[in-house]
Image (cartoon, rainbow, N blue to C red; front, side, top):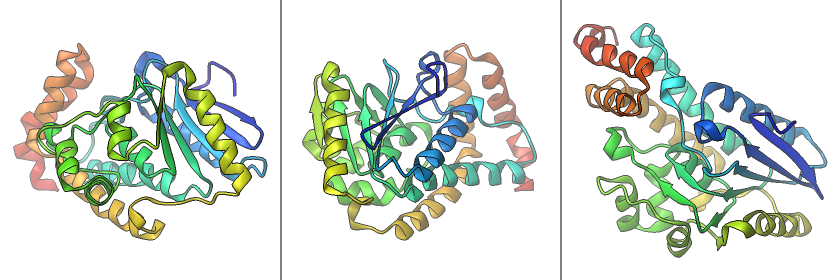
Length: 274
């Protein structure tokens, strides 16, 4: 894949690096980005020369998470609810079903689903410029990416609540390392060298895919399925629609903002169709 691809794909010494490459949109997960990432994962899964994958982003962001304004379209409420549920579930299942070890090289800020997917991988090496934000409570939606279960087991109840609850604590790379989210934290310029070193060590030791919190893939997929229903319910709730309208309007994204405004204002009518 060329340097102008949404996902740049490169393999060296059995290590395939996937670099999300849409810095203008902060590597956010629009539908084209998610399609490109899915294709890259499928290629790496089938490639016998690939034994470990590194996932990173083009600076300055690792990933701004799911770009809802570029994903959601106005349609019948039941169809929209099913679309949100299946899209959310398939995103996290893509990471859970990938058969080879994944090392996340968090080169900058990570938000929402890009954080929770990272915690479903085999390890995170963080730049000192990285941050990890899971602002679900502020957005009026439940936790996703299995974080409703895994965060408490991995980081303890107090830290999980700080990140997922009203405080919305956003740890830095160093803080993520201190709580056990990131296995390594390094100066920004050393990030990819460190990631390559770790990945090559994994290749040499024949590392297999592993999952967080002592859970199996099937257990995590069941959690993801439950969370995805709750996410779809919340995304069509009045609080979330109003929050999205106000957020997008503040960013001068008038078209997507008006879509969420229309959904919010007409919700008393269409919610009866759910």
